Amino acid sequence: MTTDTLITPSQIRQALQDGSEIALLDVREEAPFAEGHPLWAANLPSGRIELDAWRRIPRRDTVIAVYDNGEGLAEPAARALRALGYTRVHLLAGGLQGWKDAGLELFIDVNVPSKSFGEWLEAERHTPSLPAEEVQALIDGGADMVVLDARRWDEYQTMSIPTGVSVPGAELVLRAQALAPSPSTHIVVNCAGRTRSIVGTQSLVNAGLPHRITALRNGTIGWLLAGQRLDHGASRRAPEVTPAQRAQAAGRARAVADRAGVRRATAADLQRFAAEGQRTTYRFDVRTPEEYAAGHLPGFRHYAGGQLVQETDHAAPVRGARIVLADDDGVRANMSASWLAQMGWEAWVLDDAPGFTETGEPAPDHPALPAPVAGVSPATLAQWLRDDAQGTAVLDFTASASYVQRHIPGAWWLLRSQLPQALAAVPHARRYVVTCGTSLLARYAAQAVAQATGAEVFALDGGTQAWIAAGLPLEHGETRLASPRIDRYRRPYEGTDAPRSAMQAYLDWEFGLVEQLRRDGTHGFRVI
Image (cartoon, rainbow, N blue to C red; front, side, top):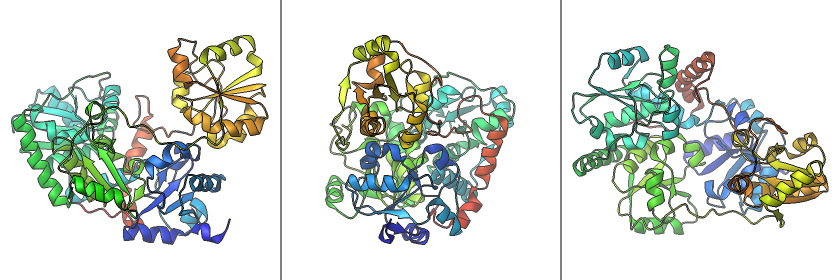
């Protein structure tokens, strides 16, 4: 390591305070990342750099600071980024411990910028809320009210408030009046914890709806801690809006965006942004996945508006970048941009969309493989496993949750970032077959497997998805784990079996975020 590859904590902090573009990358897996990291750090696990870096950090001369916590991941990750064409890659001096030794704040959990913003917003605007017991009493009493769930559809289906309707965050201003046409109807907004219910409630308040609007205090966590029952598998969705409701919502959303300082973009601006070499521009379509798939603007990725605001660290790792949003109704982009602007982003809304002409998902842009990898069909692999099970080892690099759900019988699950340790746990074989969902990530790992084992290495054609499509046998559960399951942090509000102590500890942590933001001093939040 040479000193010119280092960047100090104070230099990073100054860049954040100045609004300069910088990507602070934690290259550990998500679980250790969630145990402590700087406020504006983005998690980019070292084993996924080839898959994710070009999409998440589009400009190759972005200033990048890479760190780990002494695991030996940062320097290989920096080399991998340089191999992908990034020219300004630095190592954080001292790693995470160096940040800590400099007296700077560490934040736990994930999506912390958005969660801390929600707490800052409530503290500044005193967003109205009701405890679970009072909302339950209103439901039991047949009050004139609607409960709007601001989470993703899959989260809503897992568990929801009785009578609750799924209206993901950016859809609230667009669809609330279709669900509550009378101004006398009480609107209650919920999420799993606090952030999306606070932001969703304040969205409706900021938009000037005449209703009584309150957040469900502490979301479904608060509901469970109050000993109340949740629904599971609900499927209530908001109805379509009328042209008059759409026009009124668009006017309200535009007024909020203007107050927040959102900028207006044209097609000519997009061309100008694309020609600039010194700025990063993210382009997001914030409508529903179905609308995006049916037709979207060239160059715009999909990110539903509510989740974009919730997951800014994942969607836009380059702090200080420009973000341009698009929709076809003038509501969802303006409301989402209003929150991004208040979070300190340079937020734009595209006003004269030239046409939603592309369909489906954009083709991914990935670097070439370091070396060609021989393929093997699912049928041939099945025969190898049947005739020579001891001589063939299957290595599965998919997400651990996907592996547990279903995998090829006998396959070992492992993390690419921990390949040497993982291979030590796998009995040596004459040949290895690498796979994941599509085998893309596995193909990037194949050369390292060959070098470490000295054996033949094949990639499963089409990955485990092709194996499943062929109707071949599957296993379930944690049958063969060669690496610890640290690739994903288990959220305390996730699923239906979180311990009460973990849920309460999560709420206590959220309550303390405002004071931690004040100590940190890099948030840049400005609430209207």
